[in-house]
Length: 434
Image (tube, rainbow, N blue to C red; front, side):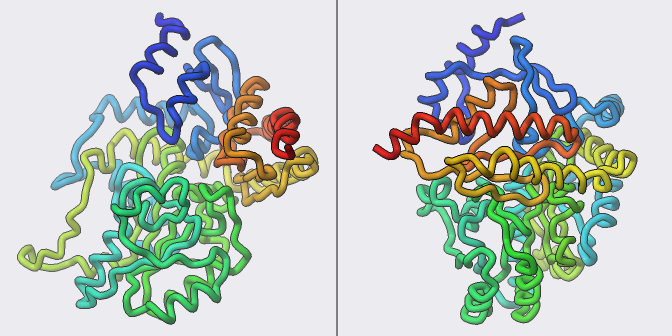
């Protein structure tokens, strides 16, 4: 068996990690995860860490859940992959039916892809092509929110608004109109001015994840839906991060009784097991693409691993567990306890400016520190030494535990985070003041 030291050397020599400054990475010892029962990760040296970010916001029912494991193994004995171009398979069909049944009313069609970025890309292209088929090609623009994040493909970056991630790609992107998050008046003004050019409005419902867990005021999403209806503009809701129970309901838009025209899901769809995404569309959108072959109304988009059978098996098992373990019913008490713990242990810390939360999504905004201090990273390192994995967005420390995490584990996670924030900010505060 290859030793941890040997693996680390190979990693530094051969790998390029996402959203990672490699120079800094190579100056530190990497953490190499080997196995993960439940909500705990173990590294190659046997050290345990609570999974405080659901392995990048996607794990739902815990790792190595026996029911999902069995479903994937059973599918592996039949076929690992077949194409959806010109073929179909039972898992994709059954999952589509389940998703339509769970989704807000009016979403009747399921288009599969591989991840959140591609789910968004699909929705944007569908909206763009929809208006061309309706004879209004001038409606080709999009309204998004300031500080939005919808993925890393060119289209999804175009409707993003986080300069740190997106600014350098400006020459590659198409222009959009950016609305002030949570301000229905600003959205109304943009639609009043540009509605004849707008194909769709795209929003993350209730909370903007990568922006640092920025929450919207109650009623904002419903207001945006009403404005889109008033101006006959499509509404795209990006539920990649918020879907599958993350905010307390299966989908966040349920909390304001909003049914979008297009909805993007990924991450928790397979319980965090395998790459799979879906864009759900209304029948109104779908019917605009129907026609004879020579009409060229086909949606020319697809991926090699669209609706991979193994991923569909994992997704079906994930939805089964929501029912058998009554996940959403038991979630409310965890969400309440999570908030109480953050209020007790984190919010009072001297260098914490704000704790933003929605469901089991929390962003701990630290006071301003010099960029070179890498304060969010310092908190992450301190948490690892105490036995938890957290991840920062700049100087916002994000906690997003699996829905399956027990209240006892939640308490331990929050206490570790609080101690890590206190430790990491103790000396740099003097540096910042100087």
